[in-house]
Image (cartoon, rainbow, N blue to C red; front, side):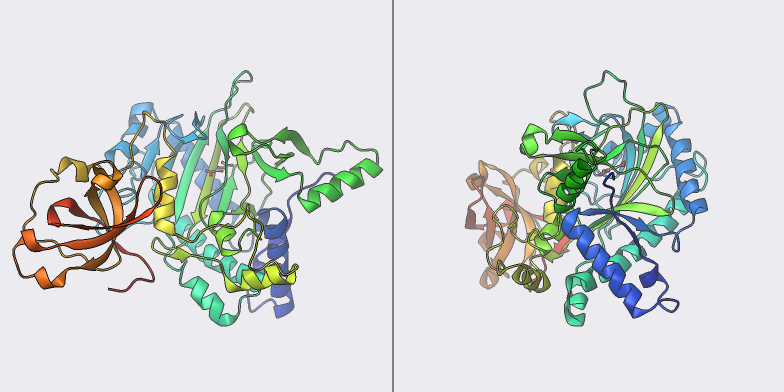
Length: 463
Ligand SMILES: O=C(O)CCC(=O)C(=O)O
């Protein structure tokens, strides 16, 4: 029997009045199992989205990608914050290699957009003159996927055993999701091409809902040899004299991602389903009990493939740290709650910081630089007028010799309020930041060496 990813219907959480508690419990338990064993599953959303809607997404994507190159470049990411907009074929990079796809990336709109700040620009949509109804149709999809994200999060919270109060706390970390949607176009890879349509990677955030057209044999999911479901499928196959492979391609991970043995499993599209996988934030929340799984795309067919992954992510400022329910679940598994296996213990992160670092790595070295261009263009000796006021916990740009005379990000720790009404020269700000060796450094600077970074506050630090 070939091994395939589990199929889980979300209907019991979508149509609460037509379903009962036992059905919801079964859905939550299936999600828990799938996240422990695979980090990937098919989510049956046929009761939530129609195939007419997804066919329309595909049609509009094709219409855009069939445009001449210069018409697509009109909404290039280079017009904006280097993240929102169109990326040409091979502009996106995974593991240092150019991906053989093109795409348009959209992020949650922000108040006070500023294209000089990483990820803080404005979305760029194909105009209605060029691709009629593109924006309106995809905006409806975004709203649906945001709704689906909260529904699946609630079902997963129940599966992991969160109390009602704990669920409300978790919900408050994702209720203003800094979502991302990509509309991707994949020309077929030539047979002799040794690259990838999309190199192997884990998703950064929370939940990915992937709608892809019906092209088979493109998306592959890596199951390490240690995956329990894989081991049992292989031994069952061996008993029946089948090949030991589990419907996959025997392989090892690329060198830069370790040398683990495993199997690449095909995750071909299923009607009525999105392919759903969990991102690295779930690894942190569960200390590795739920796994974020490597996946890649190798499209060697003859058609032009399109896919629309929607990434339901935490709020930009959410602090992601292990959930008490996950600690309890580890305890049940044998008292490892305080000492999860070292390879899965992850430090808490602020989601927006984590995302910025990841996105900066998605381009070729010679390609776009996602550091905001504006701080270095202001002379560090320039004195600002009026004197800026920062609040405790605010993220700022800091010019410091501790980071090699360059601009670095820092958190305002305290402000010398006594000097506030005096001249700018007497004001000082106490800030902390991580230096190049990742050591925490506290320093004091005057107004000339500090710049507002983004209009957001970190969670958990009050002014
Ligand atoms: O197109 C696909 O099937 C997957 C795309 C993907 O993994 C991604 O954009 O992160």
